[in-house]
Amino acid sequence: MAFNTDDGFYDNRHFSTGFANLFLSMEDLAIPMKITERTKLFFKEVGSLSHFAGRFFRQALNPPFEFKELLRQCYQVGNRSLLLVMATGFIIGLVLTLQSRPTLIEFGAVSWMPNMVGISIVREIGPVITALICSGRIASGFGAELGSMRVTEQIDAMEVSGTNPFKYLVVTRIWAATLMLPLLVIFGDLVALYGSSLVENMKGDVSFRLYFNTVFDALSFGDLVPATIKSFFFGFVIGLTGCYKGYNSDKGTAGVGIAANSAVVMASLLLFVVDFIAVFVSDIFYEL
Image (cartoon, rainbow, N blue to C red):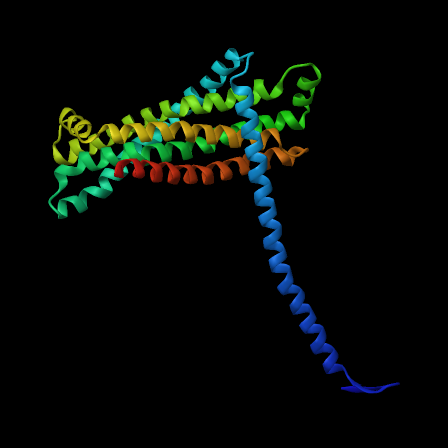
C-alpha cells in the first residue's frame, strides 16, 4: 500500500521491512551482550571467592583460636553426617557389585570382583560420592545458617561488639569441613566395601575374610594417598563455598534460600574441577 507525501509516494512495505530488520539486528546484539554480562559476573564471582579464600588463609593460623567453636562444628559436620554417608556408601557397594557381577561372569573374571570394587571405591567413587553428599548437607547448612545470621544482623552485631565474626563463624566451619571430610570418606569406603562383600558372600560364597584380604592386597600406597589428599581439598571447597554464599548473602528471607541453593550448586561444580585436577596431577606422578 502506498500513500502520498510532500516528497512523493511512499510504500509502507518498505517501512515494515526496515523495522523488522532493525528489530532482528537488536536481537542479534542482545545475545552477545548477555554472554558478555554473564562472563563479567562469572569472573567477578571467581574474584570474590578468591578474595574470601585469601581472607581465610590470613586469619586461619593467627591467634586467637576458637577451639571450642571448632570442636562444636566438627561434631556438627562429622557426627551428624556420618549416618547419611554410611547409608550412601552401603548402597553404592551393593549396586556396584550387583551391576558389575554379570559382566565379569560373562568374561570369566568374577574372581577379580574384590580388586575392581576396592580400587574403584577407594580411588574415585568413595571420595567423590561422599563429597557430593556432604556438599548437599554441609554447604547448604553453612549457607543457610550464615545467611540467616546476615539477614537478622547478628553478624553486624558481632562486629559492633568487637568480636571477629569471620574468625568465629567462617574459619571454624571451613576447618571443620576440611578435617572431617577425610574421616567421612574412610567410613564411607569401609561401609561400601562391606556392602560389596555381602553380595559376594551371598552370590559367590566368598567369605568376608577372603574378600577383604583380596581388597587390601590389591590396594597400594598410590591408591590411598591421592584419595586421602584430595578428600581434604574436597572438604575445604565445601566449607569455603557454603560460608562464602552465606556470609555474603543478600538481605531478606529470599536471600537465605538463594545462598543455600547456590552454595550446593557451586560446591558440586568445584568438586568436579578439583577432582579433575587431582587425577591429572596424580597421573603425572605415576608417569614419573
